[in-house]
Amino acid sequence: MPELATTTPDAGKPPAAPAGSKGGAKIDPRYLVRWETLIVGLIIVVLFVGSGLSDKFFSAASFTTGSFDMIEVALIALPMTLVIITGEIDLSVASILGLSSALMGELWNAGLPLELIMPICIAMGAVCGVFNGFLVTQLGLPSLAVTIGTLGLYRGLALVILGDESVTSFPSSWTERAFGTIGGGWFPNVMVIFIVLAVLFAIALHATPFGRSIYAIGANKEAARFSGIRTKRITMSLYVLAGMVAALAGIVMTLRNSTAAANVGVGLELTVVAAVLLGGVSIFGGSGSLFGVILAVFLLGAIQKALLLANGVSSYWIQIVTGVLLVGSVLGPNLVVRAREARARTTRSRAPGAARAATTTTTPRKEEDR
Image 1: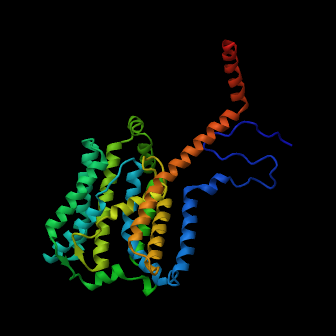
Image 2: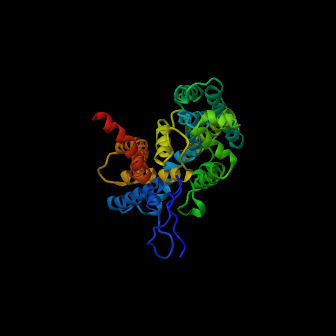
Image 3: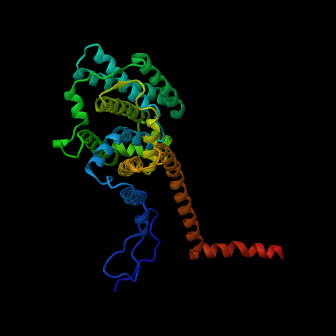
């Protein structure tokens, strides 16, 4: 029989199968505690609890309405994932959504066709993203402070454009598309937009040099810059993408509700950030996956639908649960990292070489004490 290797596996690689295993390699227990696996477990728990709270929870109508309730969050979470992986953040996305809705209503009142209005709104979102990106990349301002400021700026512009009015005279041919389902079934039309964008963003993040550059910027911006990565250009492009998708979400929300208003989407940015962080993306940048974020959006949607269908449960619990999950999504990964570091230190201290080194260094000290 061939001799077994006695060297310790490299960091980040799964350990080899134990010597006594039969029939091939065993499942590495670390894969069972991946963040995405934990989210799947939470989804199963929520589905079980939701079915107990209401017999309508597992109905097709429940999935349809739940998808409509979360579609804007799901759309905006895609570019937000890329922004946060770079170590930045964009809290102005909900205000861009409201500005897009207000601009859409004002242009419709002016007599422009929707086929022209929608590209104009998306271009407006790109301009908002350029402004955010310019302040962050060219002036070196912190993204948190910048986007908190533009959050108020863009919402104020929306109120200036449309005021307290609401526009509800959009053509039914468009509103029925936004609120309709494929073939009159249970799958919403707008989910097709999300699926297409999710595939494109996933390919860009996980299968292209552009995505690897995003991770490199989040891990160490200075090292990425010295290695030839155009950090400013990539960060700027991500803010532009975030603005465009937020404007698209404003169009979807306007047509879905058949109403354009300046105050739509207030507070939506917190739900988006909660979904991204709950999906396992590090708030410090450099790690995370789009698949985990999609699972987190589904989890938040399931929780929201379960609470809405439950009798005697206040809708304010949705905000409470979202806040708890937001704190937990930041605290959980940090605890996991600390546990891994503690385990690594324990493993190194138990290694034979470490024991001999400890013996060598402690003996002279004992002689000096004598």
